[in-house]
Picture 1 (cartoon, rainbow over the protein chains, first blue to last red):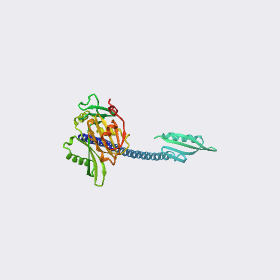
Picture 2 (cartoon, rainbow over the protein chains, first blue to last red):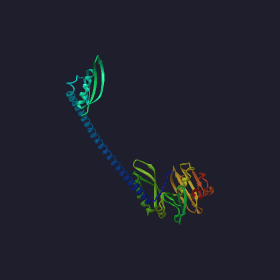
Picture 3 (tube, rainbow over the protein chains, first blue to last red):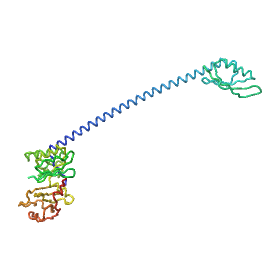
Picture 4 (cartoon, rainbow over the protein chains, first blue to last red):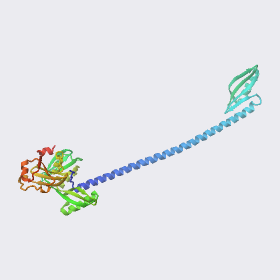
Length: 154
Length: 220
């Protein structure tokens, strides 16, 4: 048998009113929470976007700096080339010249000790170069082939 | 007159007598309370209403009742749908006239949550649901010198009657109108000899045993 429940009308009305009130309060609280969450979401989205913008700016800066460095390197190479042509090309027989940034590698042939000392003296007199290494390549009956690598100091 | 009002509180029962007020030492706050009322008859009215939603149906019933009862404030009602058709519904409206509004007010003021007001006969029927297996039956029991009589057909309450001061009863219970549908009678707290004295029909009697006040209402 179905439960037959008796309750006075005023009590039912009160209970329904209270239920409605609770529902309204719950709805308002939910709305508030939603608004707060939304605002947090929007602010975090904005900050993310700003970060991304900054990152792209930084990337552009880094690229610019890299380009500048490249340019400088090329300029250095040209400068060293100029020095080399001024100081060595006319006085020493050079072959296999390689210039990169401030470094110069070249090969020469010398006959006897005196010639060797002359070349070293000539390099030191310029006061532009630091000798990194001198290595002997070949020795054919008094004619010696050597490889010299230098660095421009200025 | 009224005997006692019984409150069922969270499974325990606390009995408050008619003249007494609520006991102040008991904490009623946020407790589910069932109020059980004895010596009250339920008026059953069958109505044919247009089909509508729950709220409108309730309003229509309220309007209908206002024609029948002078003071609707004291009347509590609940309804049950018996038949449904496309345009109309047949409902059984159960009304209880109980004028202890002050008692309810006192309970509500103390923060109690009232689940419902139950007449004793329905409460007893609920207690014996496991033992009563038929759909249509008579149910009769004696409680504090009052005899309660219930007729249920197809699990719907059709008639109920309370005979106060059972010892002096002379009239016989008229059950002719339900003769075709009901042929079993459950009885409790009463001797069979007493019953056969004022019930004409020969029907099956099923004894549900005796119960005492403390068996149904376990007080603290």
